[in-house]
Length: 83
Image 1 (spheres, rainbow, N blue to C red):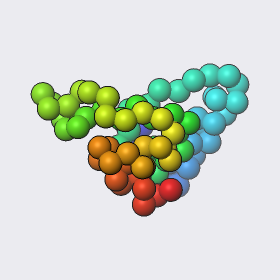
Image 2: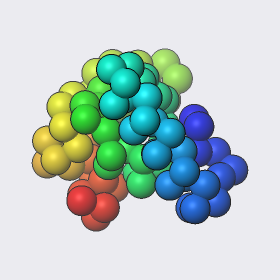
Image 3: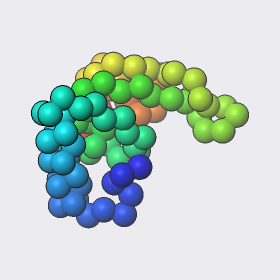
């Protein structure tokens, strides 16, 4: 979770760094709970539905917009307010 403990301004710097890597043809795989970063993703794989033994299954996958419309996705529920 790269945004843990970062101020909002630092998250913007992190996103710029990610974009610079992507522009050079690299891919980035991130595990994250911060919806400000999640909404910037090209593609999301949402695991759940809960944590531990009650999780670990693919609940939803697709663009942030698609995830926000998925009623089974807790992430989508919170992401909807950010998009």
